[in-house]
Image (cartoon, rainbow, N blue to C red; front, side, top):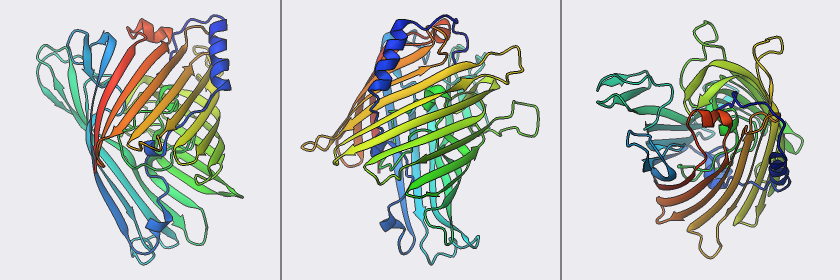
Length: 423
């Protein structure tokens, strides 16, 4: 969400100091358990066809120190979760095609090697861009339906959400080269590694900065010496499943181009440079929150370090601009900085626990005060059994932008309780 309405004044010493401390100590980790399946183990892809099918159930609620009102409860302190991942029931299918599969060679030298399908049925108690209902009714949409309350105060939306949903092809005779088509993580910022389960709670700064990490399109991956590069062209839809409207004027056309070059994912110390440019609408999860598509560009640097098998560190900083074309006199061009730092530790003597700490900030206008969204997240995850995990997350807001404050959103302290079943 962009803070376009923040007043323009000089950046304060407090903001500069916080930014300096954050950038100097960035050590952010998104653990291997927090990413979706990207590069299956070579042992899985060798030989014949292999497939994996998993059910995924996520139930989550939070306690707000200030009180919240997501379901018409007049600012109750306990509410269903308001952030991704929400309450959902999903499944995941991962299939790898062996050398002898006829489907693998259906397109000749462009061989289909991997399929990843991950749909969710999600319950959203606070959907955006929803007109206030005037009666009790069920309203059907293309990929969801709304259940409106009798007094017209609230809407509960049950919807289909596709997370990873892609096919991967490998050109015959070209090592370390692939083409993915579908819905995937764009190659900007930290690249996810592997995912043993869903219910990811720790999010990268792109979610707050440009409104998405995953998008629909195609990405080409290839070698650059010892390093890997990725080039992607996507629709700018994020988690949404609406048409990009490239050939009509019903909505502003959106697109994203992104690229990254960096160390391969099997190195203990990984690092990369990435860039992004596009016309991106204001997004919140799978919904547009504005009618305009803003011109945006970003450049970023990221790093990852794995200490033995129990501790990982990751860092990321991105700088860029938001705004329409320079010739448009009605809009400005805001300089934006987004960064986060996270450490993930699994105690060697108690490997059923997973501890995370993350600091994340997005400054939507470096020339304005009260334009940053900065938060601290602490997580304790406890594996009660192989398929069952309990997560306890504490989120503290240091600052939120003035534009969000004007909309009634305030800095808060929240405790999230999540139960995830993945088998």
